[in-house]
Image (cartoon, rainbow, N blue to C red; front, top):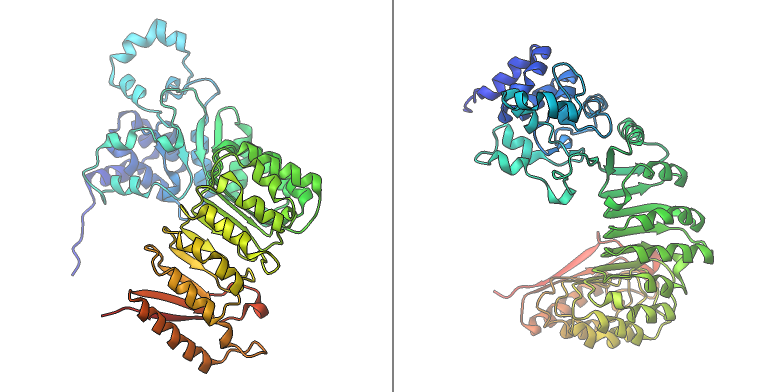
Length: 501
């Protein structure tokens, strides 16, 4: 039988105040810090817009994590909060008299009222209040609200009022613009009401508001609309960009100047369509010269880079942690330039899925892996048309990848002989834990039909090899014949596990 937990006194006080909204607003000057968050939550969930508006103006903390209270964007609440932020440009919020609504000039306070005001409790509280520097509309801040609602205890209020380094809080610069953080996912042809209203509001207050978005996702939105939205966003706040547009390079060329202004981008995922326009390639790749913090780069189907990969590689100005160039045609020259690029010297993740290597010299892949062997942790070579000759060439390089954890070679054509050599050469890798391989060539008929009997026999032989190697190991065989399907598919996996008792 569950025990009923009576409301806390703070919660009862908040509910009592909100029965008379005018009383609640007039009492804000005298409320202790501990009552502000519970009262705000009661006002939020009770849709007391007038109280919300006043409370935002009098907020006692550096950050207001509003997004932590909203399961879904709520336009009416957003309007009330943004109205509460309204303050004439250049005038600190502390200078607003909440009782009369009159703006008090700094000189007037200094010469005629400062001494008397500082002697009163009201003035002391005015100095404490209006600390808001960050309005966070992302799905964050649940810890803050949980603490103040009584779910988390023994946390000092000072830890919650302190500035947040991640968001560059400007407590030492009270006149600096307010930062508003939002999750931004631009989809289809139009934005929802919440984001549309926020964009319009931020556009009207660009001098006093910095609209910040750390993660930007763009899906199937006309480039003209994207440009309008991003014109009101602080581009140097963006750290993570994902563009899935299937753009032609003409559209990409329109977007690239904005990319160059995203100087703090650390992760970039870009999908474009096939289109050969040399001037657009140069315009796009040159923007990488401005991305000094780029760590993760993922280019999906970048057909425009075929034969021109060196142009982009020359523009990379910092070492990459992860690089993915997938599902496009690259030349031998491209792979040569990639293996010689200084920015891959510390690479942790390499994904070349869908890059056809059947016509390349196997030594090209060997040289590339040798360059990254000291730091490589993840390697994905799915659907690269890798054959036994490539495996023979890269065995020694793979054996030096001491930090390698996942290794995926699905969708390639490997024989039992090549697989045995691969397993034996990688058996000493201390971190290797996830291994995905194709079902062996001997598992299929000449018509690419999988033989379950033959597969079972080969699984038994592979298990014997694992036993012979003598330490616990698990591998997965993907039974989709990729020459027919052409897609990654891990739903057809045969597990082979050796775990000695």
